[in-house]
Image (cartoon, rainbow, N blue to C red; front, side, top):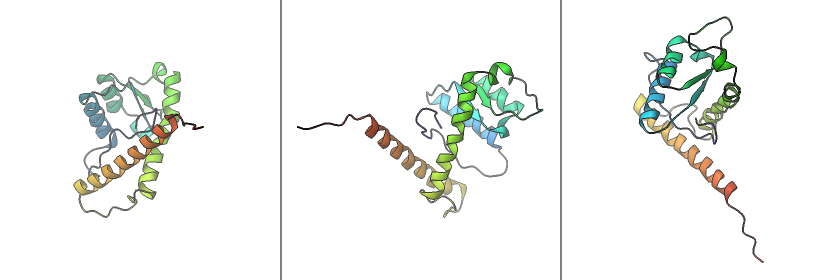
Length: 151
């Protein structure tokens, strides 16, 4: 999700065994860079507070704004990263990702998949995410368009 408007920029359904969320996130960040996006930071929850994810973000020149686990030290995640205003903002905004999942489950009908197989489920979810992005885009355009007063 990008922070300004809440658009979902990358979504992928994978098998539940074999690839962790943190590994998949690094793959998605790498793909975004290949596609021309230039993410400066990535906000994540405590599940991403691990060395390989933080190292992978650093290799991609992306600041890892990861929620910290008390008592766990991770190389590359220190006060310089977690002490700034950008980190606090990322941690506040990252919770908005749950709005996307909530909308997909309630309005998009993805609470329980009707499809068999990862490929079909992935396609259905991407369709729902595209619909959500179009709705958000329409709302943005309506808010920016000045109202014409006719006399």
